[in-house]
Length: 240
Ligand code: NDP
Image 1 (tube, helix red, strand yellow):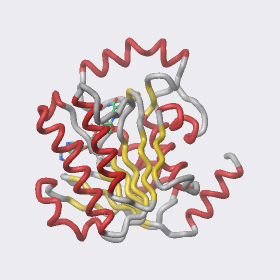
Image 2 (cartoon, protein in one colour; image 1 turned 120 degrees about the vertical axis):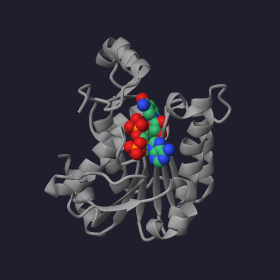
Image 3 (cartoon, protein in one colour; image 1 turned 180 degrees about the vertical axis):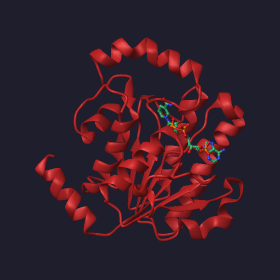
């Protein structure tokens, strides 16, 4: 390991910070949670989600699970209290939830959760957004991502990190034919220029963590796809 990174990890560990993860059952969130518990970087790890997750490995024995109803999130304000760092990997798709459902999850739930986290004392909020996020985009997906980025930034966290990954490379549990076909079609491009249009979820997860342990350069930082590869270490093309 890079000695500077090693020193940053040790310094971070010594601060005994706590964190929460939204979306820990998803493709990125699951890998991020695994990296977090494996690394021992946080003294307390909490997942906040809509269902209980079956953690079988001993590695997860100290993870605290908070089950919430996202339609009544303000009722769960206590669950958002006392976490230093928040990671948000929440999201759905228009195909799965419809246009309104997509906005509800990817914008409204995320914003409400961020508001509660801020009120609860979170000092570093990490948001998984998307490549191309732009509130003026003609496309709903990138428009909503741009809007949520702006709304979360405006909450004024002492540190807010926005991640804009490109298409995620993962062994998705849920079947998404279009995404799968796109990934297959892009395989040669990913092999030639790994940082261009895809990114393995493991790289995103490592990027989240390596970035969290290094000092902030500014209160709001936006990491584009290539930046995520860079902070994660080196370009990789394998799915895990
Ligand atoms: P997944 O779709 O694999 O997981 C999404 C998470 O959100 C799960 O934990 C899921 O919980 C939760 N969730 C979804 N709908 C709801 C709901 N109605 N109520 C409560 N929780 C809900 O996420 P990915 O890892 O694929 O993506 C993470 C983020 O990255 C998303 O915001 C996505 O838009 C973005 N992104 C994705 C890209 C891609 O290529 N797929 C590219 C760039 C960005 P549960 O398991 O209970 O359903």
